[in-house]
Image 1: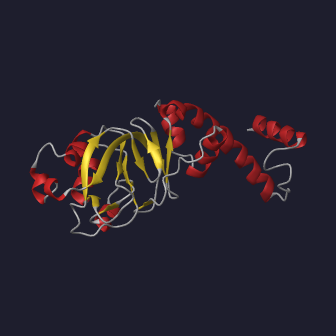
Image 2 (image 1 turned 30 degrees about the horizontal axis):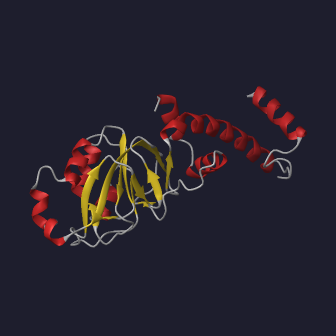
Image 3 (image 1 turned 30 degrees about the vertical axis):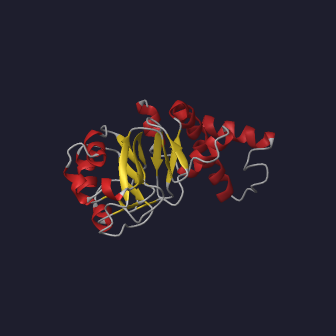
Length: 234
């Protein structure tokens, strides 16, 4: 992801991204039932780095597994690249914790751009107080550490009914999280810039008393002429 694309997506809303991807034929890129733990100051933007959970098998997922330095959850936290978003397939269940405050703090200190799970976090109040974009389904029961079993790192996953491939671009705002296929990121950013410019024009015209008919969406030549003149003046 080039720098200009990253900067544009930092100020592009997830509804705008959804509309752009819809025009490209992608209708199901919004991660379902996932919300930010705290108010969003700036969009979360980064490449996806993934972790996949499966249902735990009791003989393979006792508390002792967390002592293993090669435990996939721990390795994912310690290898998530700077500027990336750790995205976890937690089977859409908040019953088992995807992580807790210490692991999320470590991600923040290591320079990750954020974290997303379709499950839940322990210590959600502490995580919410961090200056770090974090999205989950709901707080996890504090003791349910072993209902899910971390298995694969940086493989294609499903998160909130959306396919997420390593390197896809993840954008989160106050509404939720969108997944942009990596090869479309530049096109989405360019289109977003154009859409936001037109919506600024539309908002000004609506505040001035204009009807939305022919204006939003643009269906009249008169509106097109006015918009081109408005752009020239600015």
